[in-house]
Length: 232
View 1 (cartoon, rainbow, N blue to C red):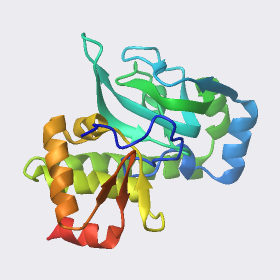
View 2: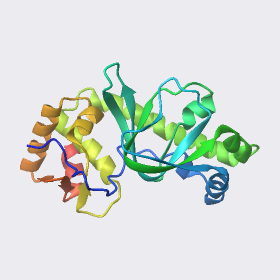
View 3: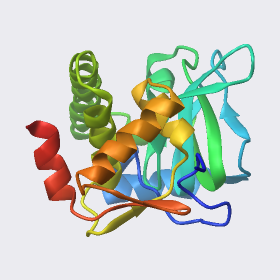
View 4: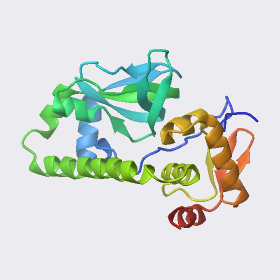
């Protein structure tokens, strides 16, 4: 069986693998527009790196089209994926705000279009705004809480339920049935198991009628049923 749940020609949005909102998306529309007006648009092809661990953090990225995977590339060149982000998401703000180097590698998952917001543009836009600062703290707190929740839950949760949790993050509030395209290897990296374990977990979920596998994609027919099963 193929290890790909997305055909090479498929360009549809696969969503994002996390539930917490992105920082840029939490800004008021006026601030987002102001930042975009001064920012730079860039395009990257699949497999190109946007940033590397250890890079100087002098700004952050906003995803306009496509997906980006964040993780760690080992000495052998293998990318160990931690997150997959989609349109509207942003990344790199923490290192920028904290003035420390990048802690994750970022690679284009297919063709992507992004907006680069420099540290200078960001600082000038939010200077003196307590409302923006307060909103930023709320979003960062939500991101930290989700990271802690995942760490605690993933320690003892079996692979099929860990997989269900990630799939539900991709589903978000999209109307069912939800069609997802993502490589099984990337799913394996997201939940920290082997590709064989992911194949077995998908088989279990399909036997339960919670997902259906097709050539080139995966379909979640009833996210509510999947969410209920994960919690039982």
